[in-house]
Length: 245
Image 1 (spheres, rainbow, N blue to C red):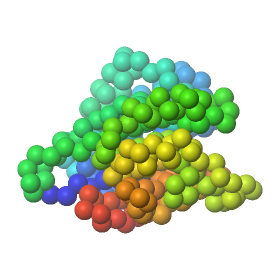
Image 2: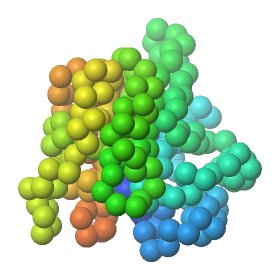
Image 3: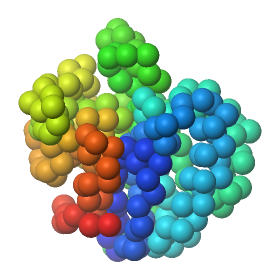
């Protein structure tokens, strides 16, 4: 049995129609609409509107999950409490895993028997304004040191410069290097098998291996905040294709 995984980011309130059954859907932050950043609005939208979309997704079986992190627009993610997650978990029948610089081990059955896929998610970004999860390089060092060595999948909201994931490729400031170089260092050092990020909407979406890691920017929207990029679909044997939604 192969594990079918989808990866996307930067929905900003857009909830794509997905038809391919999956084992894991990875979302790399900025899930909330961009027009209102107040906590009460965001937490309500997350608990009820986002949960409605979760319940429409084509989960392959009872073990299928959505694993997600917050992004710099998701201020609710900094203040979310257990009671908020409890409401969300009830609404989604415990289909989701929220990571805040934490890890999750996903168990699944392969041809070799019971296996575990390790996932780590970090929302922290370099500073470029007064947005959520933006911290100094010194704090980034502390946060990224918590990434396990050789983790199977690393998801981050911020993008590194590696593979031009953090280079702006469209819009008035096309060609600008906006990536996180502290993140560069820890991707090379920690050697995740797969890495996905967003944040820089037009960063390189090509899925390819750089060093020890297969990586891609998986933002769903472009620099104009319009749905534009396909959701990435892959299996653990390296087969990949883009799922146009």
